[in-house]
Image (cartoon, rainbow, N blue to C red; front, top):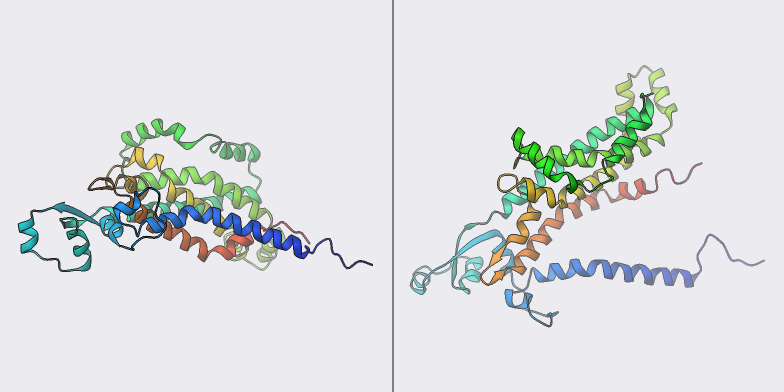
Length: 312
């Protein structure tokens, strides 16, 4: 009898799968690696043609990203020698640092709005999903379809009505307005994802807790939430990615106080036009929080994707 197993891949299949995975990873990571490398190029190397793969490393892009600069006369430069390494980088262009840029403020706005809307989306979505999963809600199917229907068209299609509404109620260019907007957009995704996870949790766990004297809220908090942790983590990642990267609403509804990083980064202008090293540096830094958040929750994410796929 042959020792071949229909469940265990052969060495050749493993080799082919490995090659495909490595090839896909290289294709996927290549743009990110190129952006990372561009952040350490000089302005001339960033726009060189053909593109330079080898280049002299410089922090010019990061200095330009975090500072505003102004040109000064040779006499002024001679009287005021540079005091720090980043001032020396700026002096090579005949300029001096006038102060910090607004990137830090825009990055902070992205953090407040992104994580704030993610928290609200997951919090409200968990409560709604639990109610739909456990209680007899009138016209439940119609309500779930209505919630899902909010994702059937691109959100930017209702940008003009939202702009007029925000302007009339004073929410334009505010953190509160953007958090509420992103929460409303993400809520349908949150409700549907979390309802699927909560449906997979046996009702017997809660019934046993209720028999032991727990209230409904205590059973939800101490029994259901720990079981739904994988779903909550997965949903939080997807909600954060949308809120963190959203561009259209941020451009339309913010201009100063609550402007996030996505509409700010492309507007970074250098001496001769678009400052591509600074843009690449901003994109690299902007990628870090979502990457760290996803890595911290990767165990829950992998479990959440396969949750309920195998039944005993």
